[in-house]
Length: 219
Image (cartoon, rainbow, N blue to C red; front, top):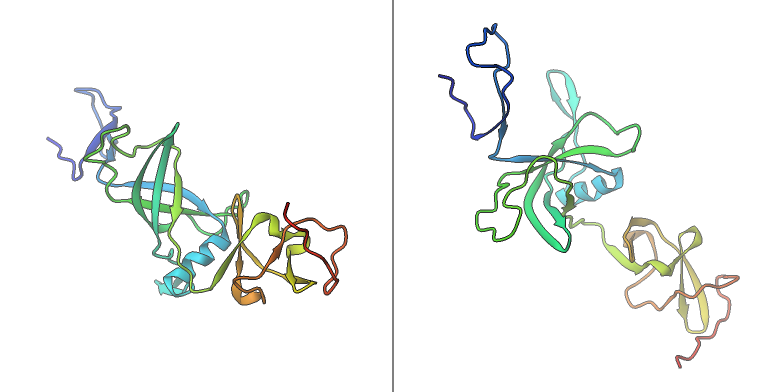
């Protein structure tokens, strides 16, 4: 009798009954159901915000004379959508899934662990997170760097933002931190924009800092 050290289900059993096997032969493959690892890829700038949330940038440590980097301890939510239905599981970024940046996608492969993939009180499908699901992963970041959120149409070519100060146009250069579908996040410590500034979103043929402009009356 062979007892498995984990709880799970048998995903393959290539050995038949009374079949002769040699030491080292794989008898079965058991999928661990106590936790699930979700593979995802993060951009380097996304990792920056997670490290900022963690309160420290990556620190090189030594183990057996070889340096390594640890993933930032970030909380996450794994989301599965089926039509209009949406279910989620709490997770945590545990490690990198490899070394360095992927050469093709220029992203960092990461692993998110879901310690409880089963939804005990689930009244709708699916009751558990299983292999093969295509999911979205949302990371919870609260970086120490102050961030401003601007409408996407307020950021013009060359990362310029125009504001109206009195009857003058002012041009501000901004550093884009993150692009969202309808919003753009910028670093507040790298611009002179302030909360409450009046943004200009209308396109202009020519924009010159300090030029006189007139606000069109709303009909």
